[in-house]
Length: 363
Image 1: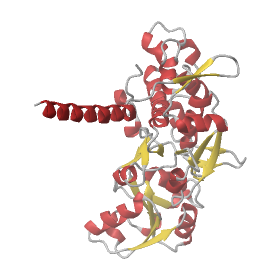
Image 2: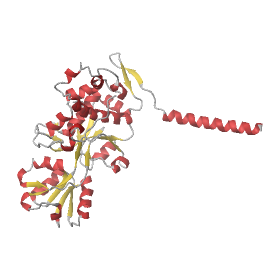
Image 3: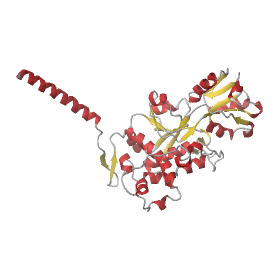
């Protein structure tokens, strides 16, 4: 009996050690405080290694596009501009309080995922579709979609083609390493359409081949088709067919595994959506700093410690709105009525306006 009791006590001791070991690994380490150069304290989360790396470097490295007007493009002055560019600035403003603390790294569709995986870029915002395989196999962690899109097809207006069914025997251009490549195969195959897919390394080469008549049609996201049409030799000489071939939720992505940096990307993006819902813009944000609404005061960092919980300054949302703007400002400036494209908001409107944009509570 005594011998049996000793054995049981030994087993319980082993279980206790195992559980203690598991607890040490599973329980999140508390934030630590470090003294900054001014003598104040700065809260840094232990698991936020990417944030620490970015702060030490003094700038955010953004992987983006430089060939797609409206989203990511280098203008005639050599400056990057566009919808995706400004969402990169949103994250930089959140981290540094300076939207210009950012380095732009142009990436092709083939380079973009490797650049995130190897740490060449901190964040990818390059008209990239959120899919299961990119989440699970490529190792990306996607933030909120910033633009809900769908794949379309462009043909010359004088071709007389008015539907996908009329593309029988056509040579269709598609960019390598994109969701559009697989979507093209799926959608035309299930319609019984025989065609030749002509794959290009980048969109500039694809568009050049299309304009020269080397290919009969080309496909990509509908927003990108509208964007590139404005830069063509004859913008009015082309049509986008009515069929939408896929769902393309486009948004920012970071390398999976750093929950703190993922949270920063996520909540910085949501801040632009919530700001629009509140009616807070870059022009009037200072007026809201004395609001009597506790939700708004907490949102802007006047009260509470939401920023501190992310390892940021408590006014990170204020900095985003003041320096870059809310979602509507970013959209209209680059894609909407203030731009050359004039794209309607459609499903990219707020949920209160018939769209599907929606921010979780800042609480």
